[in-house]
View 1 (spheres, chains in turn yellow, blue):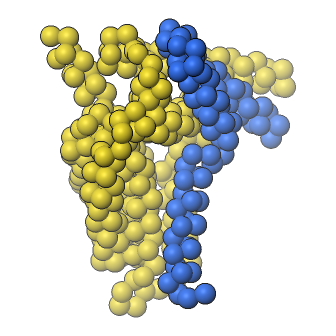
View 2 (tube, helix red, strand yellow):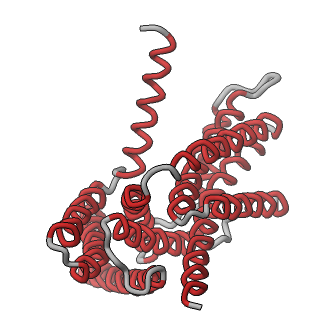
Length: 254
Length: 80
């Protein structure tokens, strides 16, 4: 029963973390792809997206299985440190955005910026190289973060296949929704999703850094859920404190 | 330098730049804090054999690092 609970909690956190990370990154990629498609035409844009997806799949297929051969404690430590830094960076941005100290990620602004840069480049002849490169770079660079999440979370939990499947579902889901609504997904609560991902990645990072350094967590994988709870409360406290401080500063200066 | 070696150099440089941006970027304090944290927890667990201290210190140092980074960001915003 205890084993079942441990497996379920670990898997649930893995699935949610990979799914949310993939969704957030793919929404950003989709915005770029839509800007390219609407401005320069769809043929080269779709080719660029396809090439980027193939490159990402090859990367997971090559690097993922190779990482499984690394000793587990070394793998946990390296991956834990990467996830810890990555998670804290996301959490920091999300907290700053929620407390009003940083502008929220605006897909409209990203879309307009991409369109503006594409309109100034030369018009396409037969094959639009600009559209191909911009679509490829957009999908590949945003997708690279998904790949890192899939490989780090998947290999550490010995569930690379599951992590890759969840990421693929998220990519297809965002792609289908984007195609159906045929516009950028501005209504998606991206900052809330980013905050959730930040909390999960920081929790995973803490857990695996500890495992890599031979720390014994009470309750094994259940310790991961405790960390998620602790970081969620701390995040909320930071937002409240920052809002109060910025409110106080505004009152003094006005 | 041949085309092949300059291509390889660009790939290596691009790879290094990606990881630099990914891990350090505009928050070098989080990167440094993580290294300090790993060193201290390694001391607690491996040298001093104090599992409970390591358990408490690890998330506590993460929260402290995050708090310091947020404070730095708020000060930067105030200066603007």
